[in-house]
Image 1 (cartoon, rainbow, N blue to C red):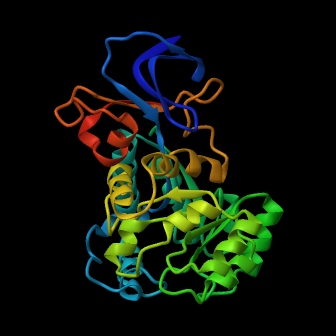
Image 2: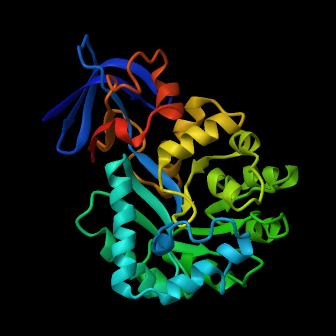
Length: 338
């Protein structure tokens, strides 16, 4: 049995509780209110709702390019760099990004992995012996589902993904697709595929929002990447009002996979509360693919991040939820328990 004391951001509302978390056999046994001298802040581990780890081989290479030039298949800078990287280089680069996320409080990421079966296998190899679980959305042919956890489509305007959607349904795994990043033209076709997850939705309009709400389709937003690519800002307030919204960092070549940076940017640039942002970064991503993490409550997996509340950055905070979302950084991480 292990116990961890401090200010606990408990449950799906992240209510700050002074006390201790009791963990036994990897699961949360109880949360006890009690006086404590610990200044630690204990929050759920992050679930990064959208990443592209493969382009870790070309960090910052595409900054300043358009969406088409930077990341669009099949001949963008990203895809040329991926084709030019050998397997060892690719696995090493992805492992470094995974290790960074692991060390900074991310327990899982929902990754769109390029290069079909071999791409999915490379990510499996990269994650070996690490305490972070990539949920792999494989690409290209339906056969990738023999290796991946789901299928990730580039966009409804890029190809006909009807066959892959059917294969995901037959296999009982999620199907996700990019939509509404450069413009709104691919949103309706994406929704018609009845996906389990939509990515970006930067240009979502009211009728799109209503259809997403009617079908209970969750959305992953990546506001920093959208800003770097100059495609606009997603309507996060409206999306949160209509469906489950997860927060992702997107392409490693454009931004570090830092959930602290993503949260701070989102909280300061969009009309959402700190609690909503923290939910997007933790509980929502876990719920989208059915992971048993992202919330601290009895019966759940004992997965949380402990911040040093006495650090020069966090000492004296009045609102711990707001401080975690808007102020905390990787340097404040004291320990990650998974």
